[in-house]
Amino acid sequence: MILMIAGLLLCHFSSTAQSKCIENFIEKYAEAAHVNSLNLNDWTLQLTSAFTKKSTGERVKNKITRLRLLSSEQSELVSSAELQTFLNKLHKDHFEDLIEVRDKGSHIKFLLRENETHVTDIVMLVQGKENFVLLSLEGLFKLEDLVDWNVDIEGGEHLKQLADKV
Image (tube, rainbow, N blue to C red):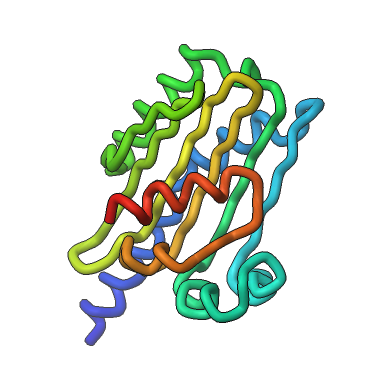
């Protein structure tokens, strides 16, 4: 029993530590001019129904424990070198490339981290001609759960592309 509790604590702390690179990236840019930042944790995510269609968001909102969003109407907010450094850090934190899409001048990249049974993190990066978006979702869910989640936030329409690939 003690071994199981220790294992659960270790998993929790390693999961928290592994998302530190996302936290650092968001903190670096959140205060910049022309940047919008959103950070929702457990209980604040219950407000998700305000952002989603009621019938479609219910299944997902209880599975997501944290949502972080960083968006800017300036595509040059993050240089290519900084973005590559960030991606390298994500890969070191056990994130895997899932899908990469080029669509109407936007470069969209999805990365995920999973345990044996569930996806624990999804990161979506959008670098467009006129914008930059980073969306990070943490929780315990399956990719299929995102199919019906129509979140009304900047960059949310790209989640539909991920769901279409599932």
